Image (tube, rainbow, N blue to C red; front, side, top):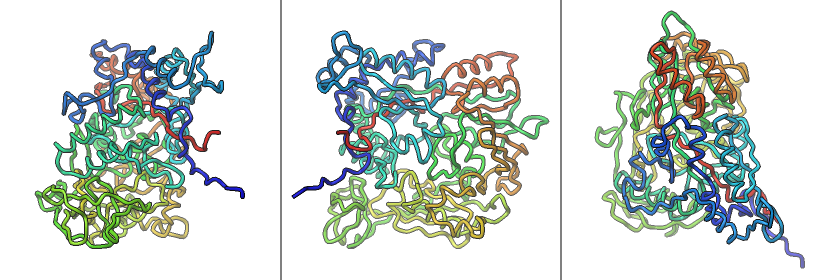
Length: 614
């Protein structure tokens, strides 16, 4: 009788080369990271360059860096040591033939890997050094420098895990990286509709549990200890090679007023205050065109940069902290001010519950089971932080938070209303909408929009203790907006990513409105007369596209045809040096303040292939 093998789901088969940790560690030892840093920051003194070197996913100047919390933290560094790298490759069965330059295995197959990143010049610069470093160890890389709109697109490149080695930068934020990057259940595959941002396919149970626990406690001391665990496992397994912390700068016309440059916030968050004497138009350069303005799915920095102009901000994150902007009373809803409650509730059979490990599941017949049917630990924590057994009748803490927003109108003059909040929640939590992550949705047991149309109350699952519970987890969509003969509220969530009224010309409540989008050239915006903070100081704002051409953007700034060039466009190469030197001139026309950024360059190693390799 013929036995048919069960097919392996796409992107779950072990990578024939990178699933061997000896190879991954050899890649780390064979990478001359100091040379990479020098290739793009050669103009900095060596002492300053050394400060940018990274050995975990958190920069060394962060309070969350493991060795700042515990000098004895077991962080494994991989200094440039090609001999050690070669020995690991030999041990893994990849030998260098006599007279050869590329290693082969016992089948004669060459050690060749695809290396994919953007075509930004500074990445091509350090990428060339990376390729050369590995070549010296007998590893051949096939580099692909592709447009950022493809690499970061919602339906291509990184999001679809189409790489062996993939390089990009995670934009630094106030909080350390959250669950979507490193938890076992955040690995994107076709079977989960590409949910999550764990593009490596890394599943280390100790790290996965720690990152969930770190995002399920209000105790910062405990969180630092948990982030230490994650960093230790991350460095030990070597699934992603940290390269360097980026030095960045926003450069702008010296006469421009109101722009606020910051390490952890996008410069366009202050766009409503920008003004140039005697000018009614400001031109901002962008080094990559957004593939979409549907920000639930499109998480590229350039999309968020433009999104700030159209949708505005309800809170900012300047200087490694959070500031309320669009919330009532200019305050976050906290337990201390009564905007949030953390109450004890008795758990019942059938309840959604979050255990002490930070995993969410349904309590049924004495078991806690997740969405996939996997049994979870029944250990929980009560309001005092003590460990308890999860069972009917046990009491667990439950966060209930009410977010109230300041009154505002959509750019077409329609007031914000209850249905707009309900629509956003519906789309964000629909498994077919293409949202980057459903982590928060999976932990909400009740969402209730306020009757006055100015906010909502979120009731979280018992046991869920988010350290950032006071930040609004959901936004709002214009439920009344016409899409053909329907309203946006009548469009299926899965169709949002293909709806131009969402992706190209959305309504917003921010300072500017999209007037025209000339693909590949520019996005023309005009002041929103209904902006709730008052009409912006400048009438028109043009986003000029300099696709993978930061030199062109900086040249235009120096010539006066562009007024603002963001750090995501300038990058970290020659253009950064140019604007820093120009800013230092007493008679210069440009202001540029270099910032040691928490944004960091790295190379992810894909532990899976799309199909099994025979």
